[in-house]
Every structure is written in structure tokens, then in C-alpha cells.
Image 1 (cartoon, rainbow, N blue to C red):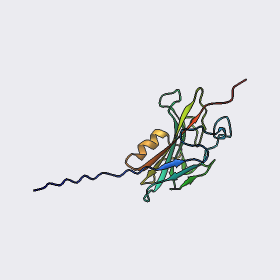
Image 2 (image 1 turned 90 degrees about the horizontal axis):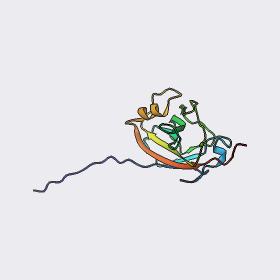
Image 3 (image 1 turned 90 degrees about the vertical axis):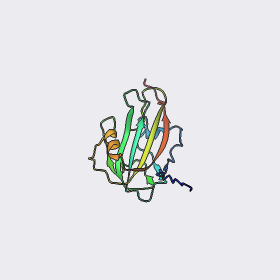
Image 4 (image 1 turned 60 degrees about the horizontal axis):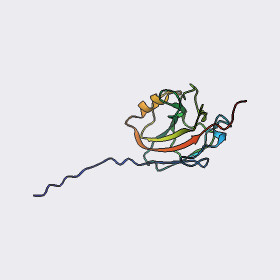
Length: 162
């Protein structure tokens, strides 16, 4: 007698996040930072599952000199789109670490920091209020993430104070 064991595993597809403004691991242009226009860059999203109901977005600087880093952008209940346009606030705005809704660009106090743009494909619309924090969003996403993607940009201040 031959015993056959079949293992089933969940397939967790990987989304791809890119930007025409900067490449993975490269410098974010000044216009998207506190030294420029402080506007959000365009993000292109591919590879999310067909059954995606909403997207969520977190931009975070783990290098910031504070516990847990600095969150620059939180957005959720974004319609599944392949492009988030430059200088837009898609979906519902959450609160960043400046206690403001929407995007706050890179502005490291010293050195070069890593800015991680994470986009999540979710199987549900989240029951969160406008102004939810990164922690609240992460808690609400538990059990709903179908796929995710990451784009990392770098920034170091170029202007000095006189």
C-alpha cells in the first residue's frame, strides 16, 4: 500500500510597487520631500489579486530617531487601482506621526533614511474612521491581507540652515 500525502499551501502573491519618480533603493527627488513641494510621488501597482476589494498604503521611515520610527503616510479603503497619481490622497486618510492626515514627505534630521512604501491588497473594506493610525490600520488588516508589495526610497537633506 502506498500512502500519498498532499500538502496544500496558501499562495501569497507578491505585488510590485514602482514609481516613475525614483527606482527601488534610490534617492527620492526633492520635490516629494520637506525641502521641495512636499507632495506624494506617483505609485504604480501591479500583481494584486482579482478578488482585491481595497488597497491600503503605509509609508514609514524605520530609521527615524524615535521608538518605532516615523510614519509619513497612512491611507486605506483605496479602490483597487494600478496607479496612485502624484499629489493625491486616495481612499481614506489616516494620521501620520506628525498627527496630520495625508502625506508628509521625507525630512530626516541627519543622515540618509529609508522610506518604505508598503501597499496591501485586502479582501474587505475596513471599518476604520478617518484619521486612523498606522497601528490601528495594521490591526484592522489582520486576516484580510491577500498580497503586499514594497518600494523603498532613500533621502538625505541637501539644504543647510544658514
